[in-house]
Image (cartoon, rainbow, N blue to C red; front, side, top):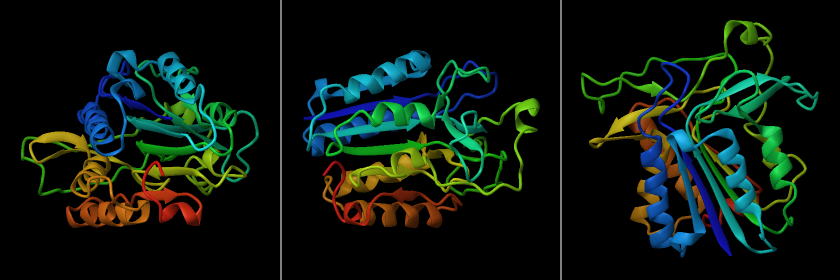
Length: 272
């Protein structure tokens, strides 16, 4: 069995938080899964914009995991805003911060998806289920912004960053001198070896929403899909990572995509 949940959010309830390329990220990856990875239309659930509420995403994740057995493959993609909050349950010993994904109805009173919630869902799976997670969002606890003068952007366009900065009262609770932990360690810490996470940037960097080749896309997802399509899916995860990193650097993006997985998984293909 193969199943995929693809979430892309351009429209946010928070004023000024809208993005441009996240829905294109989802449709781009969906096309690749259908053409090169043997997915049927019914194997893929897509949630975008206003429909991508916290409840809908969590329901989608439960659908993704439902019925998954040993040697099945599932994939979760999220393209949208990310952020961090102060850890509330004491399990983040290194930095006291929880990574969060920001749904359409994001607010700072609990309407967000914490890495602990994702851990609870994925931990119920058979340890032999293959999991690929692709996150094109930011994970910066201090609201880092970087000025990027990109030649690929028209003069009348700007570069958006996929990070929602916490309000002052929440941000003041964060110690800016604390080290930043591994991105979404819920997938990897003391978990089965066949869990794989691609992220658009390091955990202390921002992820770009950019205008490339005439359309808006997440910069990471654009090149991720470009190389999968060119190779018709026949690329190892590590080779894919190298090509995406090279293109982002060449085009002036400072973000450095990450691949978190067991060593043996690096030399396998996506969903393998």
